[in-house]
Image 1: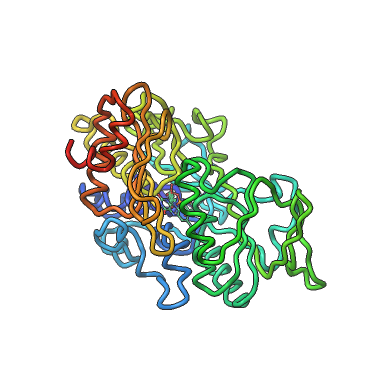
Image 2: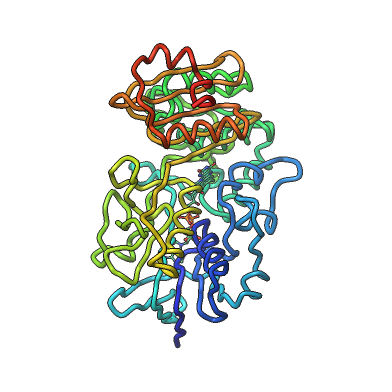
Length: 426
Ligand code: FAD
């Protein structure tokens, strides 16, 4: 049993949705394109899962957040795919790939052949078991990567109302979930090994602002230690977490957000991998001419910093997807991908954006006692990164612009004095 397509998108997440949208915009013919996804639903905006999806009132539910509502474009419902002659092969895992033969074998036993493959398999949540702790499958222990996880989390949250939750991990999944738990009337303790939250991005000063804000909402922080085991009741439901420092925290539920791993295994030994992802060039093309990779799974050249990186952010997934399709359909007109790294998060009433790179000296600015402040990162005399909390659309555009321009900075104290004004007047 088998089918053949000109273009196959492997994976059905954010990058897949935006890839399909771009193919349609550029005039793909009916029957040429297919999406194969393990998930049972058409591609959706994954960031909604830790935000609107977890609200106690009027939560976001599909079809409201199918791609491409995240960029205020049309919503790609299953009907849209049908109308444009795109085959959606959902609830179907690809279990092996042969890039020499240009075939994919699904878990249902079907062989799907392509001329061009776009790999958009994203990443999966790291499990505690990978760190020697068992109990991930126990009642009350949750992860958050896909819709099935989100539904489970909502059920567990509802049955834990008024109780205690422990959030393991201080990254954005941990921070966003902790905020959602508070809004759902659950007492939250966050546990992570680093000295402060969002350690990969925030400076201690920025982190301190958010931690104080969270504390004002009742969240407690246990830092510098890790989970070593769970306690369970006779039904194997979690009742407490035990930490390396000897602390026992009572828990009606636990959310684990300790990082992700790109889904590259289908291509190991077939495509060049680098920094944990599939290595692509500035056209998002892998070491095999017929295979492109986009989104969390791709390691690509970041032109502005002259090095390759893998980014786990939605904006990159969207833009890389569009770029890959441009390179496939209009190769002569498409230049090298020139992407400015961008990441954002929203928690409670707060909202921040970050552009570029957080290396070098940090210059903070603004009002850290209010809710409008930020930072520039200056490396080798140039602005390379910028962060802003509570900005307007124009202000965010200004910090993005200045980060891309990389202006020379002679005096850090002067930059600090000018603060946001520096970006706004440049
Ligand atoms: P994904 O969206 O993960 O899609 C991968 C798809 O591939 C999935 O459908 C998966 O089932 C499928 N797949 C994998 N292997 C196979 C296989 N073998 N066969 C068939 N299908 C397969 N980023 C931000 O910048 N800001 C945010 O606020 C933010 N919030 C987030 C909140 C949550 C809860 C999560 C999980 C992520 C968030 N992100 C955020 C990150 C962002 O969502 C990802 O960067 C983005 O989804 C990457 O898109 P992708 O298409 O590469 O991967």
